Length: 490
Image 1: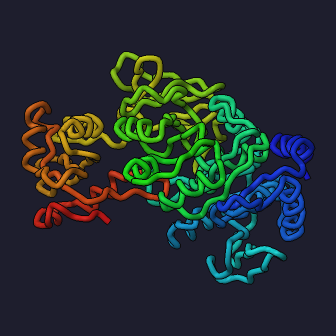
Image 2 (image 1 turned 180 degrees about the horizontal axis):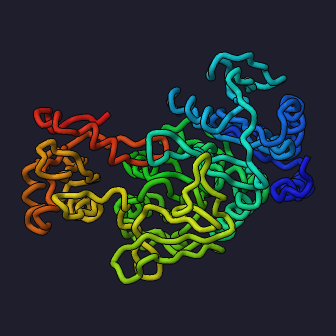
Image 3 (image 1 turned 90 degrees about the horizontal axis):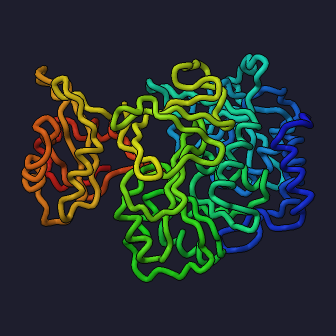
């Protein structure tokens, strides 16, 4: 056991202070675990991993399970490297992640979810630990052994991981709680996955290090989420724009008198949704901008700017520097104690190194804070001219009846251009493609005007609530030219 691990020291302080207090609640409001229960379950799980040597990678694929804190604490004591995995991850991507991270075992809700092996059921639990027959020796970490690997997509199709140590995870937790003024008097509502960076830093580490209890929710339907928020009396809701949009569209919503803080991250929050939510629930939404590599970066402390892309000021303890302040939009350098050690297995020192992270996002100063205006990887190359999708999206959203617009580049196949501009638009039934094209031609430069606008019933997102322009470009390639315009993108 590593006695000087900062997260373990923080946990000991939490236990001595909160002992018999409830730590984890079921969505029906009943107590799932007290802080003392978590400690006992951690000791019980420790017996199941006694044969794993320090530095071994243990994948955890259990969804939002009440034993997440106990498993993580046990791994800290054993000095194992935790690799959180989404339950929704595809089999091919999961197998690639297990191989790339040289994983030795997997904790899952039920056996049979991983390559053939011998599952060993955890006593008194629905969880199972599986030793992989394909397991290799632990990676050679050198002098800096990580505590956690956050899985992220690489520049190629292969996944890669981000290395974190306990002091970096604790720094992110403290920056979040201090900036957002979250205390152990609050009750977090955990519908975002704990396996994601957002959920891990806003739900799991605040429970361990600050004693902030949480509700464990597995029903992601918006109606159920609202009902459980009301039933449990949760005070803090870390959500994504998808939830807030759905809440605004619902009728007969329950009162939420205990809810005091709504956070939105994972994807840009539209100003229309923020305004509608504030009017309907008398509650502001606070945009939170962060990255897996660095944790929290910026936070809208007031929630009343109602400007697309606005993310507020840097978090407490975080330094944000515009790389090219002379331009209207620039990449940034992020410095803080929460920035990770780097990528694994291949480093990228231009992007992440020595406590500095450079995101792909383009930001601009806006009033007293920062505004995201696009991503360098999203820039569309039209015959040598660069088109920022965010500018075209902002124009489309000015058209009456347009609720959502996503602009992307797609290959033409003609050989005359690298890409052409296209868009998916969610709009009222009376809106036509020709209406939108005429509207774009009135104000946009010729190379910015979309060649096609696809009217859709839904714009698909992943579990994080993010939209992939690359995936839309694939789905709406030129083979869709003869498809009906009113289509379901699924």
